[in-house]
Image 1: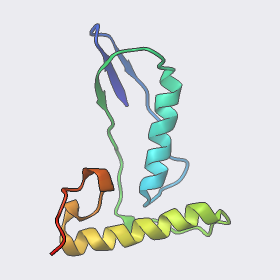
Image 2: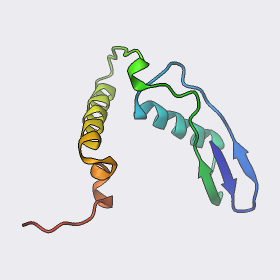
Image 3: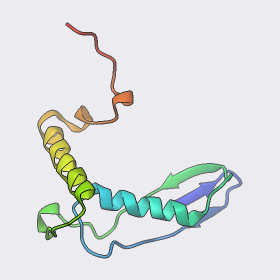
Length: 105
C-alpha cells in the first residue's frame, strides 16, 4: 500500500498473506490492517494505491475448513456474487446506494 499525503510526502508498507487465499475478505482484512498501521488521524490524503503481487488462479488455492460461521457466511455470499458477476457483468453487484434508481414497471 502506498499513501501520498497533501504535502507531497509518502508512506509505503507491504504485507503478505500467511497462506494463499481466493477470497476478497482476506485481501480486504490485510488492506485494513495496513491502514491501521499507518496510524492516520488527521492526515490529508492525496492518493492511495493498493497493489497485489504473486497472484494465482483461485482454482489453485486449497480450501480450508473454518469454524467461524460469520466468515463462512461471507465466503458463501462472495461465491454467489462472483456467479452473478459472471452471468450479468461486473457492475451487477455492488452497494445499494451506488446503484442507479429504477422505477417499478
